[in-house]
Image 1 (tube, rainbow, N blue to C red):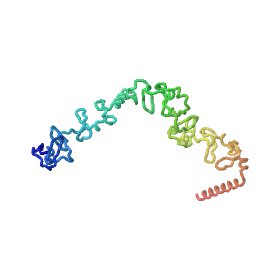
Image 2 (image 1 turned 60 degrees about the horizontal axis):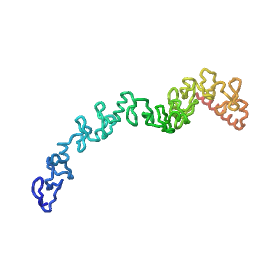
Image 3 (image 1 turned 60 degrees about the vertical axis):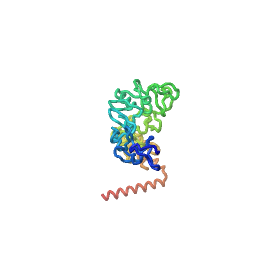
Image 4 (image 1 turned 180 degrees about the horizontal axis):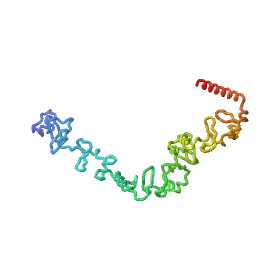
Length: 330
């Protein structure tokens, strides 16, 4: 080291002096400083420009470009577009926002990843873009899991023959029409698509639970009672509003028909039956009695256990007394 000289002051080094060595060049520690601010390099980190060494702050101020994306200085790899500089992570697709490290194309003058540019051009031409090859589909497309594809990318899951755009999806697989027709499947009466999970059976049809809705307000029944009218299902409020009270027996409208109203319920006249023997009670001459809000003819009522009839009589007398008290208070 005795023969070496400091690269700045051109003086030698003492025998036990600490020496800075950078790329085979030696400095006194006090001489190894930024040429701009003359301050030591923090943690020994420096940047070189035309053979001169700078601290990071001065190097950025003097020479580093500013990223057009984040507005910060760029140290290292730089992307250039339209005379602007970018960090690689800031140079992103104009449409999807992904980094453009894999290359880009211009779409409407903006940097765009190739898949997004292809989709945008396809949309502008009212065409589909294949979700597998990212090319425009010029012929009929095949839909799989909600995405458009060229049919030639797929084979039938059963027979392995090439598929056409008429292929059908079932249980996340694609089938040609002959193979699809061999499957025992239910089709939703509303959306006309296969039902793979839970289904609702009503009005001689199958439905996705979320598609079985009131024909008037379109709210799902979600297990609630519905009423049918001419092949359509209705919730109770709208059924009554549109067609009148439904018959308690057949659930059909009693609108413009003879009806019987008893116990807070409505029946078609021919459906007002004895709960015990199913005898029609529509005739005014036929006497009936009420048991648990159900009509009983006199004969069937007589067959009930005596103890049960006594309890019913006590309950009836108690209800009548309460009615009398409430009427007196008024």
